[in-house]
Image 1 (cartoon, helix red, strand yellow):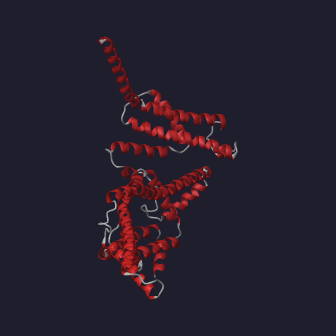
Image 2: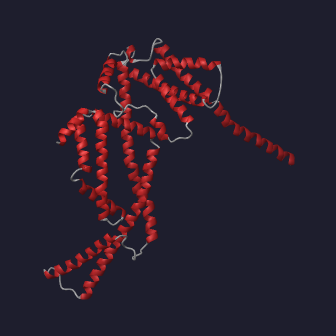
Image 3: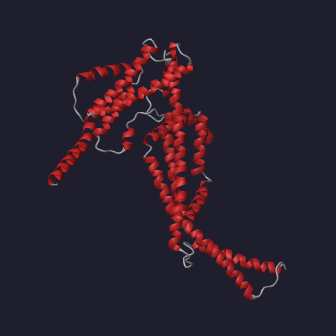
Length: 420
């Protein structure tokens, strides 16, 4: 029995050792595996070129196939180009960790480079690879700093000696005369469409997820807990003085209504005991109503915190989407006319920092205080109104002076004329 047990233990040890060795072997094989998959994707593209395009580039300019057939080949091409980009980035990153040397790699890389240069994704690969390497060299920095390294076209970039519109116009003319103008236009259209879809989907998620989280967490988690803790306790009906004043005012109105109906002969005269009984029933009704309002206000505090956490999680998990949304917003703002830009700036400033904005801020803060079950402190509200809109107005003026004057001088001139 001892020998049999020792044999089993040795067999178990060998299996465990082999199991622990397999992830290490998989990791060590990453460069060769990634390069092989990129090479196979490049070879598939070359085979399609030879079989269906007489060895030429896969392009609609060949005129050999119909639009639907070319759409099929374009999807096939994009799929394999994506595989090449991802696997080469993985290969580059793993090469910085594991040192390998193989003469066969050079032949595979040469085939891949031919495809990469032919379809114009070499710059994309260089940018992505440099980003991957920089992420490895930086010791666990935040994802936001890495995204800042991605070069995106923005209208708020620094301008040169000549206006940016001149350079863009020249680039547009050059692109129109390019032999690949139609293909570039189709590719840009697909990119723009995908960017718009991603941006709109992200906006919807950014709105729906916090709202649903707040509502569901309040109804099914927070409110039952608050109800269980507070119970039917009538000694803490009101969580602030405003609620107590409102309840007393409502009870006083009920008493005045009874007296008013009696004086108009719309109700018979009641004995003092009957009047007190009605007033007591009304007081109990008001107490129950404000007990539920107090529980709802307390639940709102915790549900809003959970909703805020869900909002932060959506933001932290959507770094790529944020970059796309920023580019999407920049393109929309930059595509507006000068009068539209001036109109939006004036509308924004008049609503939030204009002459009538203090009334809006006051209503907003009172609604927020009621939502959270806090007493509306007039001193705190007036202090906020006296400081925050001023700070916001200063920021807007600095943005106009710092960026709008360089981004669109004509929009700034239009803004000054509309203000006057």
